[in-house]
Length: 129
Image 1 (cartoon, rainbow, N blue to C red):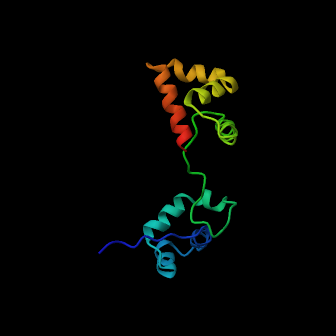
Image 2: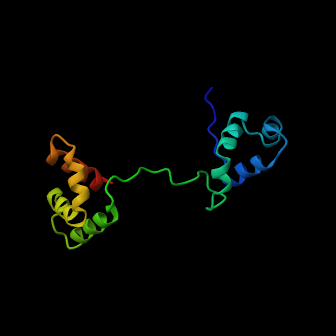
Image 3: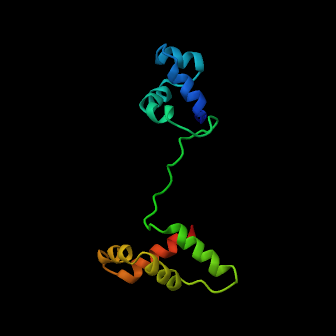
């Protein structure tokens, strides 16, 4: 029989941490696995300092880190080019990126064996998202 995946709100996590009756007693009272409560104890600082919605299931901010510093500028550029139904190419995006962050672009391709291919791949990954 498969395990049932459960998710708990930040409010429930905080409540479990506030109870100072011990892990076993809190587990029994709240019907939450002891291992889960131990994990919350390790994350107590992040749970207590969370400022978002108490009904949220996660602590947020766990997404992928951007490699290029001007991603929002590139996305805006892409939308501006596509809006009048013009052709948007990888080369055009690369040229724009060179204009806004030339030193970062130089440092990125300096360590690559195939510079053009690496740059094109990065731009294509960025454009696909």
